[in-house]
Image 1 (cartoon, rainbow, N blue to C red):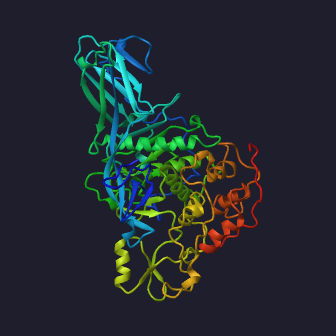
Image 2 (cartoon, one colour; image 1 turned 90 degrees about the vertical axis):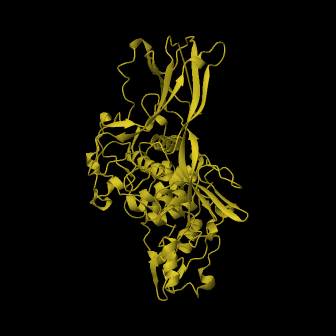
Image 3 (cartoon, one colour; image 1 turned 45 degrees about the horizontal axis):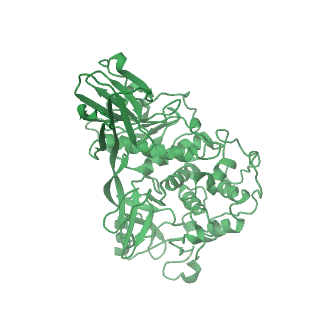
Length: 553
């Protein structure tokens, strides 16, 4: 989806490209790695407020508009008019460009990105034409990014077209992205669900009416109207487009239609922090206002993307990541535990939707590769300490005489209840397996050091699972079969009576792997080789259900 300069080609949602002499990766600006950056657990046991909620919507038509000239139904009537104006809106946004990735001391686990501006068409948004004659005509931009108006202005010279960060649906809006109007707040609780307390982002373009007269032609084509990166509205349309992409992905899954997806209201607003207050002191107890967070206790579609202190407005992974929590709450058999399931799945689903295994992580402008089944640490001669997350920490390790390396997962903890291990395991259920070789196959096993482990620490191509990759249609992806037909709830196709809660109480990685096996996507031996052998974790595939048909199979 971003264009690279020089020898770098065009990619869709952050695909990885390794070029001769240069390692180059196009990445969407992305959010929470492992450990999660700016992510805050949500108590999903709380009951949400009743739905529906109108949420973020365009303001009422101005009182100056003549009632006879107002068209507020989003569709044009079959009337022959004298004038026509058409065009497209596009917004600029930042994309992370990863160059010479193999030169990073943390590669293949992490590398540094350089941000560069790109543009994308505004799609599916409300667009309004107004003129000096009092016309107020509402339309919807097409899914291809086109808009057009036909109308008959008499005696007026100037018109204006305004696009709003609201995506309408058939019966209700799909998405609204807006800013808070009530000034600084101290906690998340102060943000309301009142429509009047927010306004969507908007961008207007004025034009001369005279060239729009059809005269047997097509009227006035405004071409591409750019919403520049330095205009705050570009953020609103970037967020909205990312959320629409995620909604489209979820609605393509079995049992989930667009009508089941309640409206998503995203709040992204500058100036919420009281003036003169330091970031450390703002919302000091919870830090929710400095986190990308899904808050179903406000309404089932409420997502907050921070700006003050931790700006994630240009962070596609943050936007899509939070929609996964929305999906989980609406369509899984139970609200998953945040740490051991929910956060890891959100990282994986965002990576699938963006078509990139790279996600933002600890450290400035760093991205992390989900396809690495370990973390880097410093061996000080007797033990692994401390963990290495940034190039500066890598240098501190080597300068102190330590040896950076990748201890096996079990060295960190034998606990499967980890978002970090969950997302790495599940990514191996998505990627191409042997056709997509592991970037790291050497892990230092317990009681060994980086200097003397030898063949005992080499596990080869341990991922033998062909998951289909991100190019597979969502409805055909194996992990989505498991999410809907084994772990799914009444919001989708109903629960599976053959589900067995074999691991910890509630959803966890054991349940996910059991579903992959009993639904026929992987073998028990392949699961064991990945989790128990290569990662060394306390897991046995045997003992789970061997078959788990769903009533609607």
